[in-house]
Length: 250
Image 1 (tube, rainbow, N blue to C red):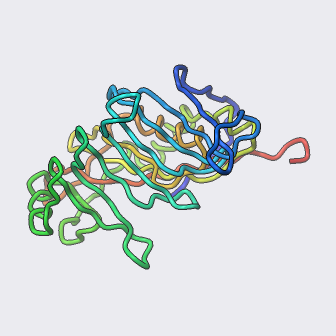
Image 2 (image 1 turned 90 degrees about the vertical axis):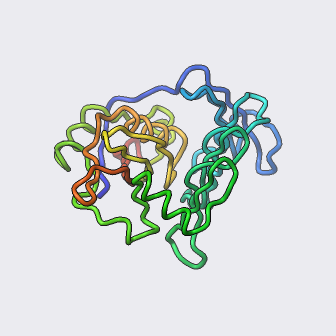
């Protein structure tokens, strides 16, 4: 369920980010004439993330590199459709595809998973064995996803609402341009409740996406999923609704 809020406080962009602006043909232009933008950010994982966005709309793609010159792939790569919904994504380790990758199912809204180990694509049998060995709950394999219960925020829906009311801040950029919508974050909940690998599953706009990721990244430990009476790793999708009250005739 999405939660919708009107927050009176706002948040500024992270210092140190580099922005580049482009016209409809991806030629460099000044910010006021831009159709697209690129945000380059040094991440907490000591990598450089290149996020390509529509100027006041959703993500186009994310690329992450070991160096600022973008020569060695290291970390998240993701591609989005015109509506800002995740099309496919995965991780690289020193230039080689690694860990879980997701792809759309042809003619369907669902996704399928593939798993790499340092560039080697595991076959279906190896993938299932990997999921079982690491106790990762993957929605693509329903026979491995008997959760009772699934992971959740401490305190349930009420606890989540209290957390958002205390911490969610509507970004200045979105307020100034009256941007609103629902962003969905995909992340992994460890058996300890720690959050790993948060990424945008459904994008709205740069600053709103950033705020949703921040809220997941800084949330307290979640209650992990249970499978056969054991705590296990599981994927989770969490929506955030951003709404602004119209003013000054807008």
